[in-house]
Length: 292
Ligand code: GUN
Image (cartoon, rainbow, N blue to C red; front, side, top):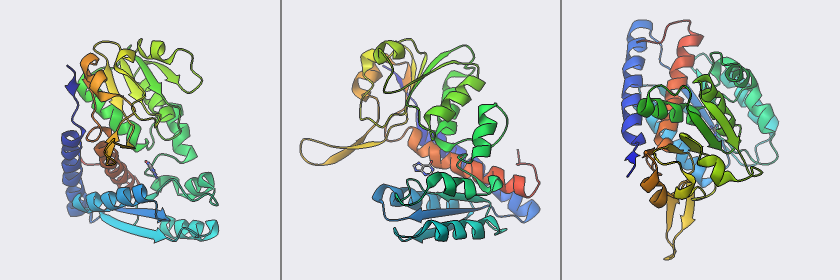
């Protein structure tokens, strides 16, 4: 049976460490990191995330600014709000919750956020820095996944890693991070031939496709470490719903060496990493070191 990697406990430790550092910069520099979250429309999943972000931001001792806009908000009104936040000295991080309504160009919006206030790591400059293995803000979900992998495995050098899914939010940045750790990285996707066979080669498997329970236990190399990024709500036979990952947990747990559960694995790490990125930006914008 696999070791269960407890993202809830890991993220609680990370958040309390961030709160300790926030306290130091408040006392020593009179700076309170501030995170602005912009939500356009009323997507129920996005509303849940935005609420958790606001709560955890405040629990870490930071200021949280929420901007909820009507689903019909024009792109120019959204860009005007971002411009205001870019120029607000109390705001150190700006997150525009994705997905945006269809009439808004996501790329244009993301790249209008000042690079110094990008806490998602989605701005082209941060994407570029990550792709050359330089410093910069790293997307939250891959960063949280990497932290758990390193905590569990230590040095990742030379390990074979497969990432199932090639999204800009998870798959591609995850590949860049694992490459930087000197893994041999495969990115698999919907056109990959013999996906189960490719997966069985890997010491590290990261599933980020958004397909409920797609990765089966017999796709996993015995003893491999499995990071399940998927969060899918499925209907059970009795009509109630439950959350499942992209990995079939019941079969995978019998084969893997370690695995993240859903819920309670990668999910809680994502918001903790958002707070981590906000603290980094608050320090960088004020030209101070992040406390040890
Ligand atoms: N929607 C789902 N995940 C994310 C994320 O990490 N950042 C933003 N901005 N929107 C999201």
